[in-house]
Image (cartoon, rainbow, N blue to C red; front, top):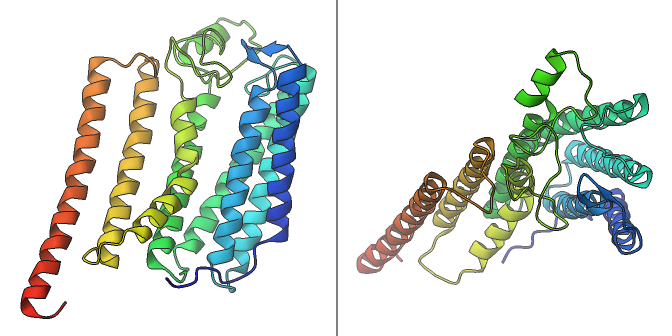
Length: 319
């Protein structure tokens, strides 16, 4: 197998990865020693979730810059900046956790509004910079075409996942009605569909609603496409089938990306219909089964085609 490393990993991204890991440790300690709850979930759960996500993101991007060609300095610089933004975001969440108040959608006081506004502005800058980096990555190559495409597709899908977060930031219909009536709300925006504000029964620690639709699920899956796609690429690289050419492996990778996007869309669609992930209706189950069947048919088609071409090549003596 061709070596995949072109340049040394970034010391800045290593530092961000280590910093995020420290925040994970702090959050775990907080969960153990601090009994407080915020909106019905342990106070430190959000810090823990965001610290883990930041760790995974920084770790993955550190690998990405190590396999890109040395000339990709601008991309390297953008990724350093975006990871710095993520660390700042988690630190603001940590601040609100220490204060014992919600970090997201919080407009209870001027300070809370300032913190939430800063978080919103930072994540917008993060998205724009990631978009620029993604466009630049489209023109870069690594030692493996399959790995190259996994990075490109992973970044594109992650951008879609991050964009889904904007669905949560605006007032939902119930909040809009309250605001139009001239009343004040402490929380404007929500992860949960069909309620005035977040809270209520949820999956332990994670907090995803067990009674209503929850937009965090599709957001979570979408944003971690950058981890899934390279893992899928490495799995495909590891397949020993001689008849599975590089072109066919890339086709399977594209099918995986299309299926992943379909799953994200399916999860968001379910949430917007105010349906809990734990209680899917018949329509949701049938559509999910149809999505999986479609992916399976496409994968089978590529495998059959690859096998047929290999046998034809052997018969003609060209294999």
